Length: 104
Image (cartoon, rainbow, N blue to C red; front, side, top):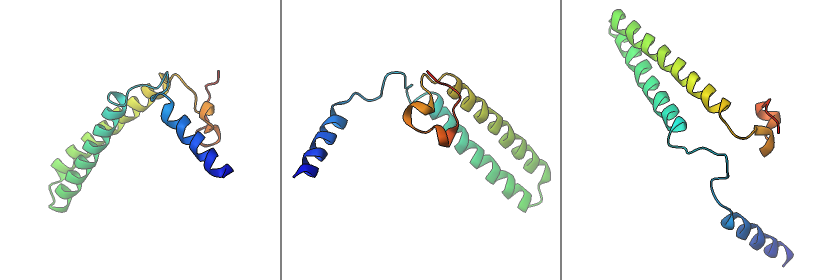
């Protein structure tokens, strides 16, 4: 009986809270761009490998360079996302995992 009451209160609290919490950015700009960048880099490295398998070295190197450029773009987006976060990972109990240096 006590456990079911706890579950009911816990469920009610989770349902009644507003999502997304204040300070969390929309997932449709930087996170979405990161996802698109990762998918494009997967495609370009696959094309690079296929060109390499048919001995088209010039095209393979071009696709590899494009993949590296996408990796740099992804890293830049990740840095921007991390620097503009309005919260620290330590606030949600993940400090040991991510070693966030921000604190409030």
